[in-house]
Image 1: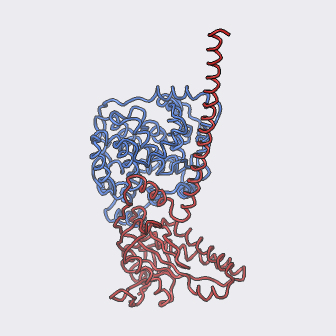
Image 2 (image 1 turned 90 degrees about the vertical axis):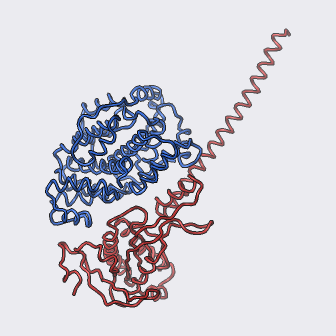
Image 3 (image 1 turned 180 degrees about the vertical axis):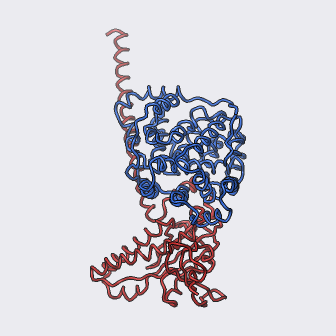
Length: 275
Length: 361
């Protein structure tokens, strides 16, 4: 065998080894790419799942803010309208119904109320037992937040009526909801511990909305707004003034107005406040 | 990351055959926007989609790559599946591999890009997300990153033009699937080098352009502030054609602009529009009533529909606004409907741009 032939064989062997190594690397790269794609798909699914737990915008903001600068996401001072809704007679109902039926009834209630809130540009912050806390104007600036919130409350009332027709068909007891609304300043942003963070609005506004919601039972009405919210409302909302009532944690008795309906034409002050 | 998960309604518009428009788009951009003929009943709107595209002669100072990324970020923020897919195809046709585009999208939120690019992307995101409320902080961040005044104006324009295009394509639910799947088609993959060649041959840098005619109506100050840049005559022409278009009354268009300025919290823009409305004979008290409650007895039936619609275009989720637009379409003529989309979309872009360029929020 000549030297040239030996060199050729050696080159062939070398080429074969290189080809085998290259093929191995390509297989490995393809495997890694598959893993990367699977991870990306998983991330996408997680993000979609997160969107069900918090507004999609908040999830996106959490992802970009926390990975962008490496700093803590900041909270902003804002004037927001808080809506607090609570089922009337939930405790009695929970004692009468099977847990599975109760859960189905509650889910139907939450879905319909959330849809009404979302349709009017609010976002549900949290479900508290049978209660719902929602904000208007917290995620984006919204100069029409008061009207939006009251429209949402009226839509919730209408949705509740429709839901009660469905429940009656199934022989289930009707539900009723009390809704309290208040507008005021606070701090909007991501709050919580290192392990768990949520988008929240911190301040007296939320407490007062919850207190006003409790007053719906005192006054025997379903939707109550505070004076701070009332002054911002469209004159077509028909309101009825309620007697001032003391509430826990607030020094002065709170003046509230029951929301009766939305009229087609603007009302004068006498009709509007029912005095 | 894709926007496949973003809900998108069935299309509200059909393509109208318009060879002249398609030829104009091809001449200017190389490849015609497949949805462009949906807008042909309102010529100013269709032309604006071509003329205001940042990559075709609009930019003198801003780096093209940064402009591409800014357009991608804004389209992502606005969840515009059409524009997002279009920018991705543009990058892909120019030779960027799909994995690299995906990596780049993931990198958009990370700090491994040059600081000036990061500042530009943060600005783009802030303008789409917060609008004028975040304009001053975003502007200061750009200045700290060493971005010059003209470059900043062009960046604000690129963001505004994308905000405009995003709304024009999202509100009527322009079909997105064909565009999203385009790179998967064999013949398109084979033609990719040719597509890249066509696109890159048509993309060109802008040149200093004299501004001859400034429309007298709102946003004239913005146009003047951009004088010398190619952006200025393009905006002036679009605004002039928009005002001259007969499908909606001038007062109706002004009211839409006023609502959007109020919703975005730009006091300077709102003041400019309010002056124009007073010149139209609208009493100040009526304007206050309209801007406070989005309604007033003095509104005519079309205005009563379009004043609340304008507010819906400020912050939106695609499927929700598409459902509302469907209800609106059934109450208007097609040209009225398209013009309403165009006016609202343009106002959203220009108001955000004014807040940055004129610092008037």
